[in-house]
Image (cartoon, rainbow, N blue to C red; front, side):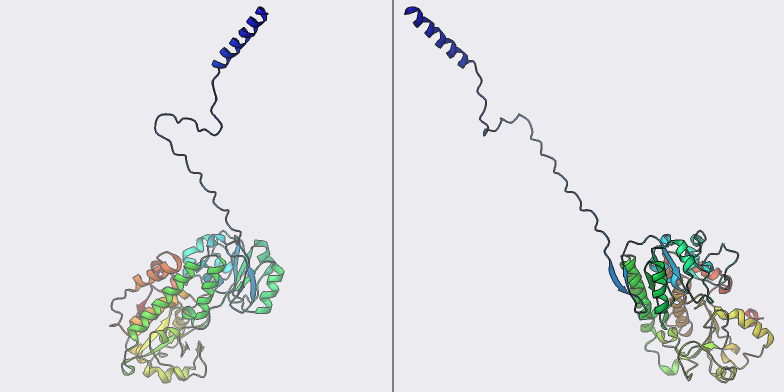
Length: 409
C-alpha cells in the first residue's frame, strides 16, 4: 500500500515540474511588443493608372454637307487630294502622317505639273522636302478633275482629305476606298471666310488638334479686327481709288483680271476703282473698260501671279498703261501670289496688311512687312518664311513699290 502511495506521489511531482518548464504563448488577440527604435512608415501602394480609352467613333458633317463616320485621333496614314487640300491639312495636321502626295507637290519627279514651281507656296517651302519621299496618290494640278482611286489605294491610307467638292463623286470614292473621305472647302472670302474656319475646326476634331485650330482661327479674326479698326474712320473723300489686277488662275491672269469685291479691300475699307460689274468674284474686264477707268486709278496693286503674262504684253504694246494715272505716277505695288494651286491663305492675310499699309501709310507706319510675314507664317507653320517667300523667282524680291520702267523694261 505504501509502495503504491509513493509511486503516485512521484508521478504527481514529475507532472508539476513539467508544467513549470513550459512557455505560455500570447493569445492570438494580443499584439506583439514593438521593437525599439523609430517606426518605419509603410510605402503607399501606387494606384494603377487606367488604360487609355479607345478612340470612339463620331459622325462629322464635312464642308459639302456629307455625314461621315470618323474615329478622331486614330489615323496614321493620310492622303490629301485636290487643289488646296494638302495646304489646308498642313495648317492643322501632322505632315509626318502623310503616306502619299500628288505629283504636283513632289519636286523630285521629272514628269509632273510644274507651272507653280517658281511661285511662293508656303506649305511647299515649309514641308516640300519631306514630300519628295512619298509615293504618288495622283497627278494633281489644275487639269486634274477627278481623284485617281487606284493610286490612292496603292498608298494604303486610313483617311483621305479631299478638295473635290462633288457629293456624288466623294461618296463613290469613299465606297471604293473603304476609308473616310473628308471634303474641305474655303469659300469666296478666302482666309476670312467662315467656311475656311469650319474646315480648320473640322480638321482639328478629326486629328485631335482642336487647340491648334482654334488658335489659328482666333489669330486670323484678331488680325482682321486690327486692320478694320485702323481703317474704319477714314473719310470716304480721302480714300484713293485702288485697282487690283492679276487675280485668278495662274496660267491665264493678267492686268485685266480683277474683282470688285476683293476681300482684302473690304477688310481694309479700301475704295475699289472697279464698282459696276454685273457679278461679284474674280473676272476679266474688257480692255476698253480698263482704259476708261485708268484716269481714276490712284494706285494699282498687281498680284505677282500676273507679272509673267503682263511683261510680254507690255513688250508688245508699251502704251497699254498710258491712260493709267497710277502707272504714270509710279503708284504700282506688288503683292505676293494670291492663287497658286488654289489660294495661298497665309499669303492672302499678309497681302491684306500690305495693301492696307500701301493705301494708308500713316495708319500702318509701325508695320514692317518682313516681321508681319514671319509673324503670320509662325502661326500657320511654326517657322519664319519671309525670306524664302521673297526669294521665290515669281516673287521678284517680295512686297515692293514697282519701278515700272525698269521692272517691265
